[in-house]
Image (cartoon, rainbow, N blue to C red; front, side):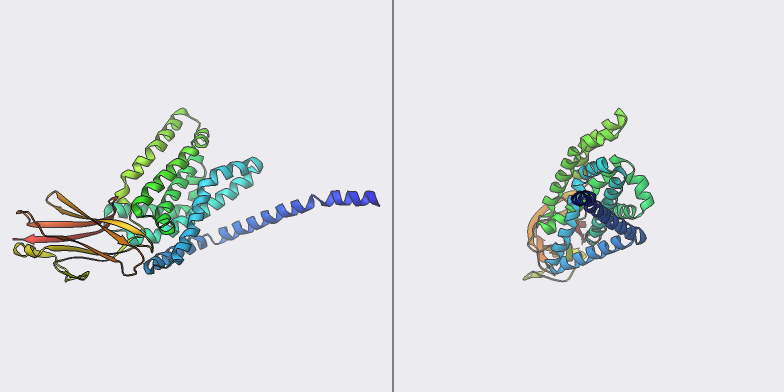
Amino acid sequence: MSEHRVNDEAGHSPAAPVRARRGWAGRIRRLMGLHQRYPWLLPLVSFIGGWIGFAMVKRGEGFARAIALLALLGWFWLLVEPWIRQRLERRRPKMGNFVVNFVSQSLQQELLFFSLPFLIGATQRDLGQIAFTAVVALAALVSTADWVYERVVARRAVRRLLFHAYCSWLSALIVLPMVLRLPVEKALPVSVIAVTAWLLLTLPMSVRSLRHLVTRAIWVAGVVALPFALWEIRAQVPPAGLAVTSARITQTIDDMNPGAAVHEIKRADLERGVVAFAAIRAPAGLSQDIIFEWHHNGELERVSATIHGGNADGYRIFSRKMMFPDDAAGLWIVDVLTPQEQLLRRLRFSVDD
């Protein structure tokens, strides 16, 4: 009898871990099956979540920060994914690769579709910003098309890492200002530094995946050049999280209330001065520097101001110009910018003789 009990315990003790493994594997397979059956569900929920977050930011509510925090959790997965993939592939190559690809693709969808509403809301009628937002929309669509994703992104380790880097940079750029109340001009360099550091840490892994010496040299050169390239296109990045609720050129302002908008000003009326007014909405608790740039005939004048977030109607600021040159006639442009030259609004007026 005692021998039977010993054999019974020995026979059943490994069964619990086996059942547990099967249970987790079964849940994962069911989740993947649900995702494959309804591939549109996660992007739709993420896109709606992004618009809800955008609407909540407009009202200055903390709920938007909570949504953004959930998106930021996905950013951390993208940072550690290569090492998790490596460990799972060693234990269960096929299953590990499949699971990691599934989780990564799902989180990329979530981050891209969550970011889109903020980018759309911040995009101005500027060719560079429109192109930037269009590329993000294209990347979001690629993440939802499994046959494209598997062939273009997931098949090669270097492509996966590059797509990871792009998604993590984009999410950090948009989510960090909301979660950490980080000004846009600081979020941009922080996101570039974080992604560059991540690429450098994964460099040995990515280099090993490349077979030829030439492609390895190109990849290393690309990693080194990437932060400089991202910094060069900073002016084309829509300042997500900031939105101009009202802006105009006027000649009067009373207690931060602008007068009627003007588009043409007689030269004789320049004595009254010209006011560039803007009301800018930002996340609650955020202090953000703003630049007014006055352009005319190749000449440039810059005036800075600071806004504070949390006002649903936008924080009101203005720049008044009283001194005009003798050749003031012609088109004047006033750009409302972040310190990194991201365009918030472009105002125009003309001076007639």
